Length: 494
Image (cartoon, rainbow, N blue to C red; front, side):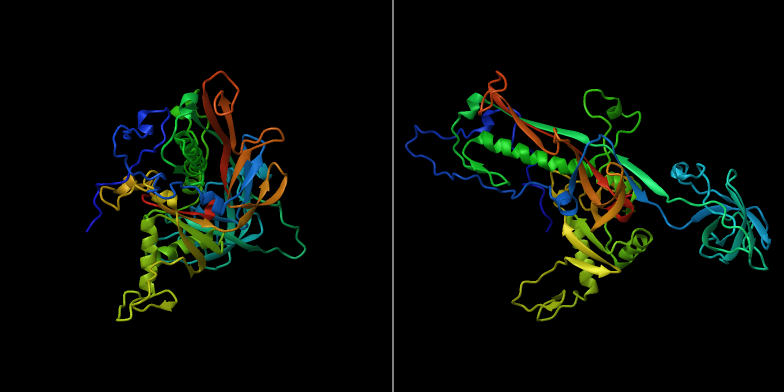
């Protein structure tokens, strides 16, 4: 039987911007001779309602004194081009190839002409035609005899007597360098290659919140003892609201780092002069734009994970990875591992899951915390993707969602464990950094990691003649996603 939609869960928070009659218990009539029997303590029917902890688990926080964070990530070590064309006929002994690949725009900063190719005379290369799976693929080996940097072409002489394969057939070719060869007594290699770094940047955003309560309402007697997720308790309703405002702000400090996007040129956010600024690159945006994406929603089969592993082989090949998943994705992977484990077989003694045998009197463990397939994968539930007030109710299991409508429905993310080495522009040297970490604005006189201050004239504050207590919250931060090519985003859509 399916879960009924009513009665459902409440989505509106209990805190209000102003004091209302609904914030108080009003059904106590002390003129009645029969007083109600009440519970003093508020019942926590939703458990722990906060969704933060993701960045605390996988990242770190460190200060920055600039409103622009820049870092360099190492490029590939070897040279390879996959979109090369030639006009020579098949079996020709020599050929001139035009390199049509999108070249690194940073080449001008490392001593090469912008758009210049990185192949040099005297280097030996492998040439492979990019034909379909039914075509005949014959590789050629050749030596580079001339390079025209301005035209983006190289001239090669083939080692095979039969010359080039699949020439002048509308094919594109893949070329990569595997060595070099020079005659005795010849001059050395012409030119040199500098380290090819990719430069990335992000800018922090300012987050704010505030809670306000009047001095008169602070003197109101409360009847119900309240508590919050951080352990604070009390009998005054405004204290609970202040704590919930603080917890909500702390959640936003994390979810903003996950969901933030830069303001595109010509957008309303970029043109607005009252709120916002430039936006920022959140984790989802960074992985979606320069990381890896699994567009099938959730990897549910071994073949899906094999494709993921093959992609990871082409990236950083990080040994240990953590899967942060919503409930559907977590169950799907559990079911996949259970089938591989032969869990479909039942007997009088129960089902076998994991590395133990269950009997009828044992509680059956139907979940898996990790597995190894080429790399180590550790699995954990991500509360942010399950919470119905956040992303948890964006996807209803498939009904009504198809094609592009599901492009923003995230089922989980693979995050590499450990740290990576990058060149820190501020420090001026290489530094070890977690793949995910938060940079917040700070100096010797101003720390904007997590600021809170009280204004007004109530509750002990004496900063103005306002008959209220205002609790202000502020933070200025951004998240740096280093090595996004090692991350995987599990979502729907192409």
